[in-house]
Image (cartoon, rainbow, N blue to C red; front, side, top):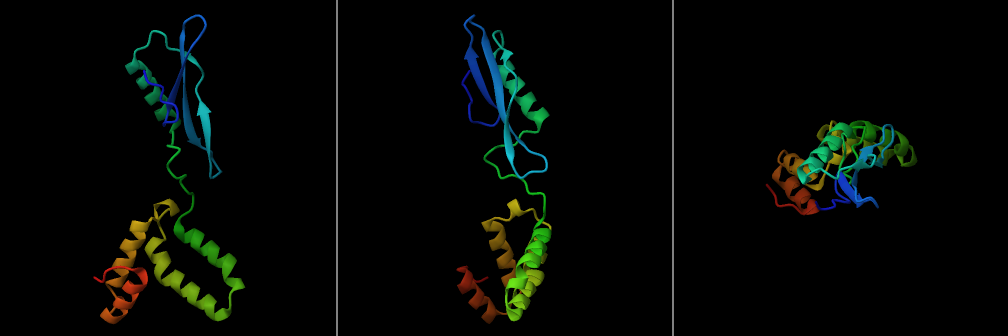
Amino acid sequence: MKNRKGQLGGIEVKMTQSNRKMARIHYWNDVPGEHARKRRDTKWQDVTNWSDNQLQLWRMQVIAEAGVQDPRKPIPSEGKFESLALEWLEQNLPRYKRSFRRTVAMFAYRYLIPAFGAMPIEEITGPVVIRVIRSTLASYPAARCKYLCMIFSLPCP
């Protein structure tokens, strides 16, 4: 049995002085109410007579019961883009000149919120943004489209 330390639901195995094989499972769990993960461990368990398959089954049961999250995956955000964008606008617009405030608010309400409003923040990735830009560009006249493609370094549709 390979020690799967550092992986999702990693198994730590040790031998005791009395030649008993002991194991515990490390896993990561989302902390409720916080944007964080905390490492947790099961209690040490005697697995001397267990096969590798029984150890893996135990590991899968612990992962399933705990609702374990992969520590390499982003922590899911509780808010959607729209609520965070509106909060940002409320906090940041007052520090800009009035004309720039209108421009920023118009851009957010006309383009960003309709495109990304219902999406959780962690789902907004580069490919998603490019897809939205391309679909938006398709609705522009050719001359404006060419200019925007040049700005975003994209081929024109």
